[in-house]
Length: 287
Image 1 (cartoon, rainbow, N blue to C red):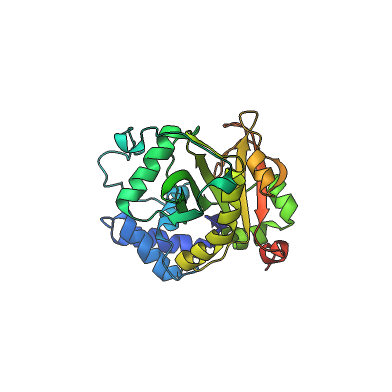
Image 2: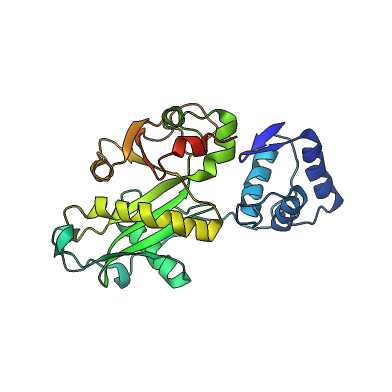
């Protein structure tokens, strides 16, 4: 058995994959991944095929020399999309008031293409880490105070391995492979620079903790039980996460969320977790 993208593949299944490729060398990679998901019944909790995940697994299988994919039919490799600043995201007049004096806050899921591009542009322009696309399951929100945009936040797939997180949860590798989708990563959190509101960040995190599990379940058929996020120190101290009752459990190894290497390649970050269920350890330890 060999594990790719949290799924075990037997030698027979790897032979089946190569057989499909050899049978039709002109088959594009997207139809191939869909066909394999149907054959292996590899699906998300909501019943949709995990074809994007399958494509990642196929690339890793090829990198390990276990299969031979047909050549990519894309003439040029994809470039990371860029979002140059426009007037739509120009700095606005300052808003200075504690959170209890602001109009009611509302979380607005980002869905429409136009709204999605604008969200990306704000993050690319004002977030310390810039814009980075999320792969797989994800949720993005605009946070409004009344009718005014004050912040943006996104959540996506959790890290595959985190020694300090995994020790805190107490699960074994098999339990982690099965239940990792129940952990969701807070990838970006941006308070717009002209918004100065004491208590706003922790208030937003509390609102998200109540709403996202419902939205995630409606979209993906799975209800998360734990949030995670990474805070790069000494640039930031995680003050808002601490104020929102997140738990600091340790530090990353600096290898990246999906990296197969064993040495540090990115800055080490603090790990913060937020349980969404009082019995989160039992849920994550289920066999």
